[in-house]
Image (tube, rainbow, N blue to C red; front, side, top):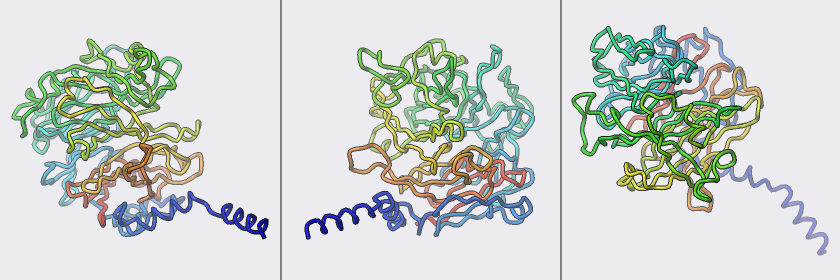
Length: 469
């Protein structure tokens, strides 16, 4: 009888799949954890036709049960590569201000009216306009995901700042000289060379003007990959309220520091192999308008595989602490490098401009063949989940062929690791060449506006996803 009991127990253990059990628990508690009825079971492998997508742009997506998509804008003049977006004004928005990730001849920064989806061009002349972020002082910053060239005249992408974006139209930008001209109220926009030049993507901005940002670069024979930087304003914003002039922006002047992990032996354990843990913000002198990418290796900065979007953790900020999370997209098809989401802590907010804290990097999400190549990231207000957009190898994902997905990840709970306690698929695209980009929530966390970039229609599509519980 003993032998038989042992055999029965072994068989029971062998048939119990804890991973499946965990996933079923996430599904069973979907409303509590993610605000949905149930997640999307698997990535779509469908690809709708242009005629069907034009007839009903919501057919480009399949959403978790309980969520609903409506079309905010799918105008023929909505540029096809709408990327990151910001609601404006932030407290009571009437518009979306968005980057279009195309060349200098196409619209770069546009605004879209929430009431009817009407589109107007604010600025033309950027090269791969990508990140957009509303500031605490009443402006919007936006940047170019443009890599440095061998010419000293183009040491990388620009970061720009705009005041009164609803009253600024048709401005031209000369990205070689940095001059803005023409249109209506070109003086409402200024370049911000004080933060340096690189391929801008993620902008994690604090209310006092401290800015964390990465260089969207991959590793190679002469580069460590994309490094992360910290900008500390010469004149931080210390009082609430909007500024009256762009000259009053904390981004007008300041100092730049680069992230170098590894403190053992007096900061000698840095470089390949040290991608998490404690580190130092290393001063980068003479960085105004400089090619920061060229300074990464010489300053032994930590490199990542194509840093993408980043977002400040508002829950930590409300507790007086600094933490931001961002994606490093990886290389799915060639390397099976699935990508990752990291979070960086930087001490107390009250001391962040002093640069005395030891920054620490830990993983939040480690990619898999099913959940890979993380790109944009959005923090869901109230609930505090991280909404992560995939940007997989197109067309159709070279490994485990499927469409790009949208994921919701809960925060790390009370356990020994720093990883998210679980992620579920909340959306999948039905277009093998498209990707989710620029998702942004309203302040209540009830509307999630997201772009379906370079989709089959040939023009932009922005959806409004509602139904969160």
